Amino acid sequence: MIQVFGKVVDSETRCIHYHSERDVIAIKCKMCQTYYPCYYCHEEAEKHTFTRWKEEEFSNKAILCGVCKTELTINQYLQMSKCMHCGSVFNEGCRLHHHLYFD
Image (cartoon, rainbow, N blue to C red; front, side, top):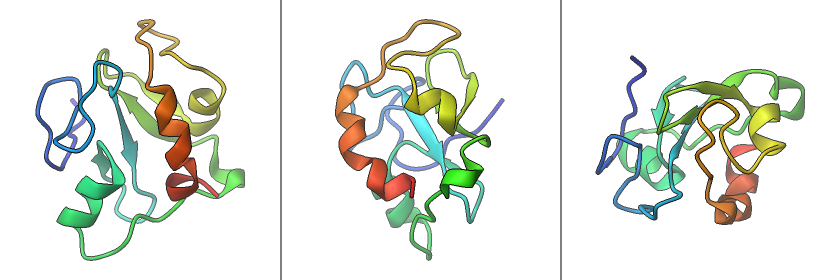
């Protein structure tokens, strides 16, 4: 099973910062290769800033659906609003933070 670090509050990767019904993804930091529910959780736990993924790396699996635990590539995640495996809807507000995770 893939471990998600940070201030996770439930089994579907919601954290103390983002915990709506649709906050069900975790994102892997390129530098430490560790999944966190959000950049705040990462910044509170690590000594380095979240390293963004470059566009040519978007074929890497770096998104985890917190509901079914399926790893998605960045391209897959960016092209959908819900998990292709279980159908869980992702928070559309996360798009406002893409600049923090992806170049």
